[in-house]
Amino acid sequence: MDEGSHESVSQRTVASDGGNSSIFEDVATLIDDGRTLVEAELAFQKTRIAYAGIRGRNAAIFGIVALALAVLAVFALIVGALLALAPLLGAWGATAVVAGVLLAVAALCAVLALRNAKLISKAFRDEG
Image (cartoon, rainbow, N blue to C red; front, side, top):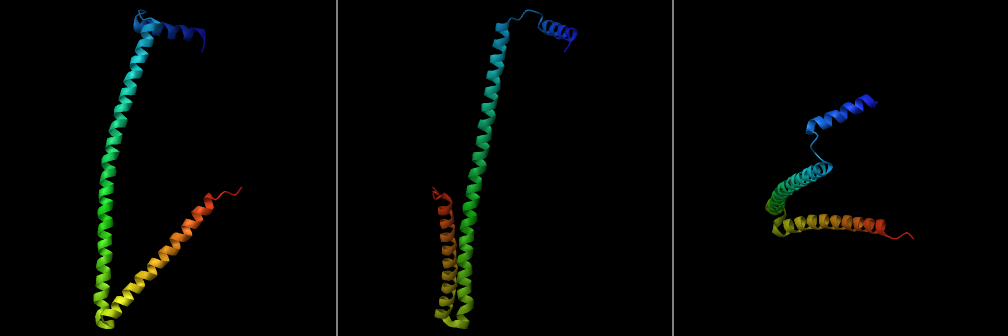
């Protein structure tokens, strides 16, 4: 920046405030502007947290309802399978088939859970 442009910036600064402000007034104005900015930011964050809280609560409620309905649907499927197999296999046979399938799926899930737990344990094991 050359000397001529520096002088014009200084003249514009003095002209904009009439030359009556001191450094203390400028600092006071800066502090006031800072306070205003902090208050506005706090208000914004409070609003954002309230919005997230409401949305989070709604998501939790809908998630719980969805889970409950899914469990009821699984029960309905089990009862339907029992009713459909009963004429073919008899009541005890249908019960044995449905229970066997459920136990096989439970065993598979248990093996997968154990494998994942071992992988997690291995990842955190101290290699020292």
